[in-house]
Length: 353
Ligand code: UD1
Figure 1 (cartoon, rainbow, N blue to C red):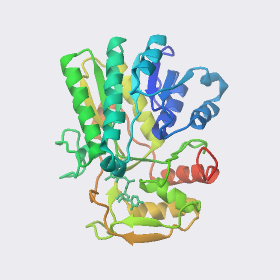
Figure 2: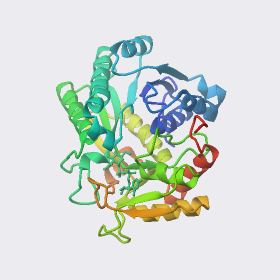
Figure 3: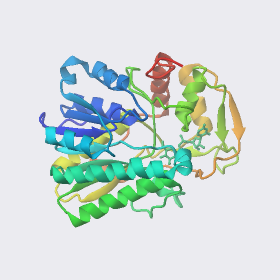
Figure 4: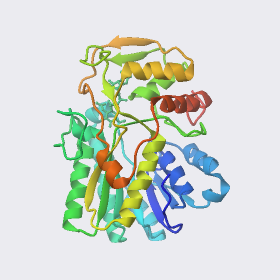
């Protein structure tokens, strides 16, 4: 874990009750930061914030504030920025379901674009000009080459991906016009796993879109079988390959990015991949999860999912060199963590079907 913060540094974390948000807030608190979360609970809940407090204990919980609020509402932003002088913002809040974004693009433009633009306006007004932004490997589209390197041409494949791409462009434009801004764009690959306590993890509403939450729900008996989308890809076992990264590694990547913002002049607006640099196939992930859980995951081989790439993984060189950050965990730890969370919380935070 990186530990060079001044205890006084105050960080606003938007979407801090979500999957990556909760894990990052725990690491921030352990590292001595003061944290304010703003979250609208669109895809999260108060119990997640309570669990963060439980995990860090009463002493560090004193450094955590929570506001239920929505970035689309300027009054909510005004209230939070007028109360506290923040040193930086980590901006997770946003929607991320590809299919939903195709069906309802206005919702995505509203939550992701309007929310973020309002956030920049409030930051400018209160002179908070350091930002860590949640981008995604989705901005590489169908990568022509792998591993994905940060200076590749970018491309969006759907409205969700377009919001991430637009928001990267918006960040670059703001920083170009006002060079005092420092913005780090973190391009996440496939975040999975859970906090080792088994108290925090991913808890999507409805039927999961992503692979690991789906596998997890099959393992606890909520869903009957996993549909494997594509078994005729030109890969070692015919299923598609992704770069899965442990959420705790991702959380530490945010601390490394913050430290970079606080210690480096002239970083401008820079993108970093957060991945492991290793590819794992869907079927390999199933086998690893079966091993970690001792549960059989029935699979049904299905046609490819439209828009899916064959093989995506990160080049990790830039983050290693410039952020001094490198993922520590492998697929085995990711699956073990995921199962520990699932077996303790088969119905997620609510505990109810
Ligand atoms: C997806 C999004 C990406 C987004 C990320 C957010 C697409 C095309 N991409 O990434 O833009 O940033 O989620 O977390 O949707 N799979 C199955 N069965 C399932 C679910 C998934 O076989 O029930 C397969 C997929 O076909 C894919 C792999 O598992 O090959 C990973 O899928 P997923 O977890 O949805 O992540 P991405 O598609 O990589």
